[in-house]
Structures are given as C-alpha cells and as structure tokens.
Length: 238
Image (tube, rainbow, N blue to C red; front, side, top):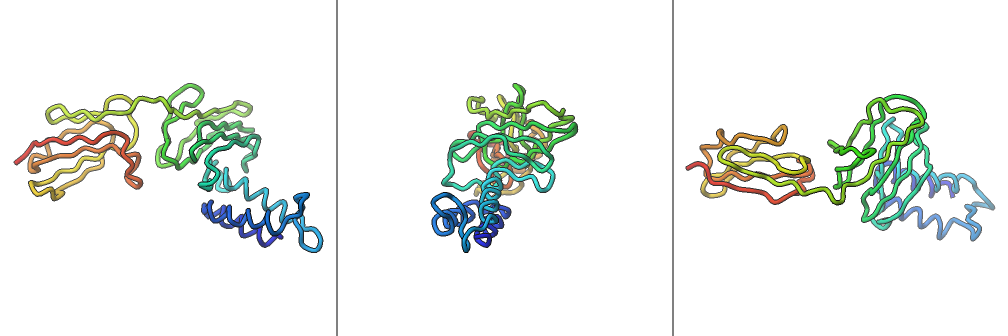
C-alpha cells in the first residue's frame, strides 16, 4: 500500500511521469479495493493519501517555492483539466491541457509579491490577462502579484509565425519575436566556421565576410533546437 504510493511519488518528484503512472496503475489494479480504499491488512490510509498526492505532483509542483505547471505529465494523459489545487504558498492553481501542453492555467495568490511560474513545454507564448508574455528558459515571473487576484495564462494558438528577414547585412525577425536567434557561417564545403547566439532579434552580418554562406535560425531554445520558423541563408563572402 504505502510503499507503492511512495515509489509513485518519488518518480513524480524526479519528473518521470510515465514511470510514475505505471506505479499508479499498479496501485489501483493490485492494491486498491473496489471502494477505492487502499488495502494492507485490512486498510492503509497512507496509500490513498500518497496516491492522491502523486497525481497532484504529476500536474503541479511547488516545493521549491516556484509553481511548476505540468512538470511530469504522462504522455497517456494527453488531455484533461484540474482546478482548485493548492501550491505550497497557498496559491490556488487550475490547469487545462490538450496534446500534452497547457492551453490555459490560472494562479490565484493568497499573499502579495512576485510569483515565479515554471513551464517547460514547446508552447512558450501566452497571453496573461490579455497581455502577450513569453516564458524564458521555462520560467516567467508575475511581478508584484496581488492577493485575491486571478492571473490567467492562455496559449496563443493563433499567434502569427515569426519570419527571418535578411536585407543586405542586416538580419531582423518580423512578426512575433520569440525564441533564440542563431547565426552560423560556413565555408564552400559547408564546414561551419563560426556560430553566434544573438541577444535580441536583430543582427549585423558584417563579421561573416570570411564565410561563403550564412544561415540564420530561430529556435525555441538552444537546448531543444526546435525551429519556430523557416531558416534563411545567404551567400555573402568568398
């Protein structure tokens, strides 16, 4: 009873959602009566409390002080919603998700102050109470949050796709500016000579004159390297 729930919780805390779900399914199939009481000669409440806590940990974690949304969501739970769960700081959290990504979630704090929200999925652009915001490195801070207010994040499914534009030696990103701009220079044999991570969404290609070809990428992050739009290339050097 309690041992199975404890393993479920440990896997959830280490963000291994699929493995945690295996333990939860085993708990329900092999360690639970038809009335949903956990059995262990004859009943063990630890298993019930532990399993309920494990489900919460798959969908929201806040033990560090920050509030993480869908930190260990199992692939099988591709769609769902939960409401009224409590973070460690007392904030009330509600989440709706589909295709394994959050579509809407809300935070209702019980005290004033900054709140850091963690969300590490591919869709990083949201509206927060009708204003556009971006998660950077999986984090966003609600500055000076007020107790009693409800802060609702809604995904920008219909947001315009960004576009890389190269005019002469100037690179810009049109439309929604999001993600990380990467510029790489190559010689005639397609060997990379240099690569730069750009701070912002404008760049000058003058320093790439010793390269034959320059390619420009817009990724969601350097770590994940998911393209946010079509890359562009231009021949500028030898």
